[in-house]
Length: 203
Ligand code: SF4
Image (tube, rainbow, N blue to C red):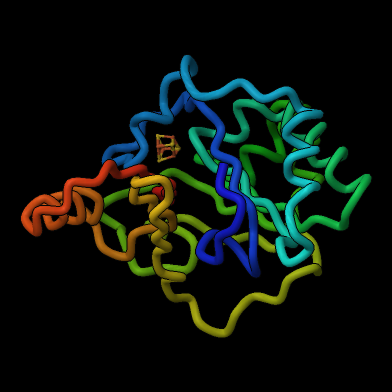
């Protein structure tokens, strides 16, 4: 989880990365998020309490992964607990399209009904672009409520870097393909030997 980012959705947001994805997009930048084993187990109530304790400037939460729609019931319950305390903006990524979600599993529709923004579709590396909040131009930003106004320009929100406890953390959707390997190689060439933690999104 990240407590504050400005590159994965409108405004200042927390990010919850779920573990596990049933899809296998070529070029997925988050292979560690694919297995359903691993990660940290967070009871919904505990995660909601942690998020609701964040400063008021954090007005939104973004679900990424992994595949959020692989854990729809837990995330829907989380949204309900969050909004019982604060008027959270909720955004989610999904490798499934909006149309597939609308005609699919009822639990996924329940989560969809709670979202302000959905970024949908699989990442396609041959359609990579410097796009707002997503990695390839087949993916779409759906504004499902009138909470947010689409920005005038569809361009990359950039990346966010933090150094905490001797580890370089980065998050966001890389505007160029191959960023992760290039970044890690560049740090090594500069003799910077800090652990690197990806807090990123591939879509
Ligand atoms: S890009 Fe997203 S949807 Fe595709 S395999 Fe990776 S985590 Fe899953």
